[in-house]
Amino acid sequence: MNHTTLLCSLAAGLMAVPMTANADSDVSKEKASQNTPQGWRAVELPSIVAITEANTLNIEDYGASITSADNTVAIQRALDAVPEEGGMVVVPAGTWLCGPLQVKAHTVLHLAAGATLRLLPFGTYPSDNGNYKAKTFLTNRKNASDIIIEGESTSSSIVDGQGAAWWKAVEQKKFDRPALVRFSSGSRFLVRNMRFENAPGVNVTIGQSGKGSHGTVHDVVIREPSSTASTGQKSHNTDGIPIWAPYVNVYNCDISNGDDNVVVDSDGQYVHVWNCKFGTGHGASIGSFTERVHDVLWEGISFRGTDSGFRLKSQRGRSGQVYNITMRNCTMQNVMNPIYIECWYDKSTKPEPSLAPTADSVATTPAFHDILIQHVTATATPYKKSGKAAFPVYIYGLPESLVHRVTLDDVHVDAKKGMFLAYCDVTFTGGCSIKNLTDSTKYIAKRYEANITGTYDGSETTAINGVKVSKPMSHDYAYTLLGTLRSQQSLSRGVYIVNHHKVLVR
Image 1 (spheres, rainbow, N blue to C red):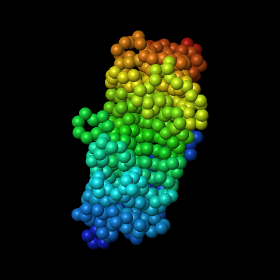
Image 2: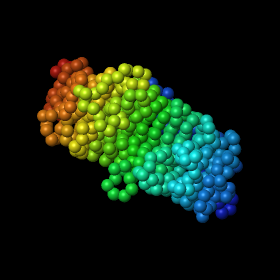
Image 3: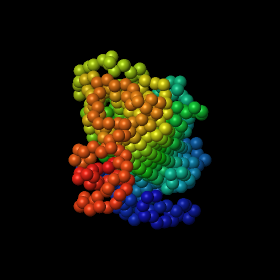
Image 4: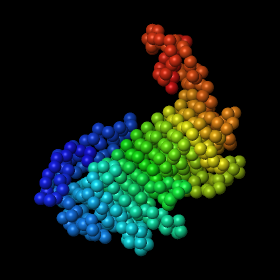
């Protein structure tokens, strides 16, 4: 667990259960780790009464058994028995098969080390007249708030969706599948210290249809096969953490799956994702539903073998103003699409920019602006013979709505194609280096109605007072801002006096 614990014997022969001293200590580490960007409101955390022997419930006491083929009724009985003022339900070590469960307000659902909650298999798992999406595995009751779902280990506290049969079935006929966790309304949710694997559909969803707010997910591992796996069963639409709500923190997560690793969709505002590892999957995504999306910050993320890095996608009819979007301090290796922004999603064949049809600009037209990509490095970008993939930078706006005020600052990408820039305006600064390793003279593969400011060949950096200095700066005299000689050296990042000018070296 992520809080102060003590052991209290519930009864002879029962497992020892972690206890919290009080509600504040229960989320004290989360409070200390919030890392709220300047000017943003802090994400609110669950408020739950102190956990005691009296309000701690063990699912075995309500009839759950590791030998049972279906523990749904027993586990739901334990969840329903939580006092109105709050309490904790413990899932002990063992594998527990069950169907959809609903969690009431002020509840901690705690998976012990060695505990696996496993979905009933495809064919047995219930639907709502054929609608599986309405039967989320773990969800909050209508408008229920202040809920914690937690484990003791990211390797052995597990929710297992038994997804392989679902993925195979969906290849034959498309249909909705249940999420592992969905908080569709209410507020103040926390998911921590556990593992999700083999989800039939998406994994952990915060918000739905404009409802829900204030979610935190941290120290979570998510694992499904890639949607493009060359061997074994592919997974489909297994998004890691979809966010449809304002005020969400995601950090210290390790996600490899078959769709977006983390995705911000409509109503995602003041979303901060940091210090995560993304493996297979479709990257740090926004969209394709992007109504009312703004103030999203991705930082400190490592991408390895991911389909995309930064990915902003939408189309006419499902967007609007999307702004204040930042990615910074990220590294990418073997990522097919390091920086990818498009307004033509769901178009399997995108029109040539010169032939792109125009339309009236309305409230749901994608209007992407004020986007900053800063201190990002991508190496070993794969090659693919495609008109819509494997570009170091791909930006394709609309004739009636350019993607504008996009800034790439200190961005370095090695690829085997030039950039694709259409219907956009882009500023390169901070010594950006966007390399085409196949043809070093062809920085841009396609350009149409694209306004470009700055350089992208690594030759310049920008000074505080507008003076441009060749980069790398080689050897020069480095002074403090007081004007005293400090040393003669190669300059690293920082602020310096060079030839009577203040210079920022990034």
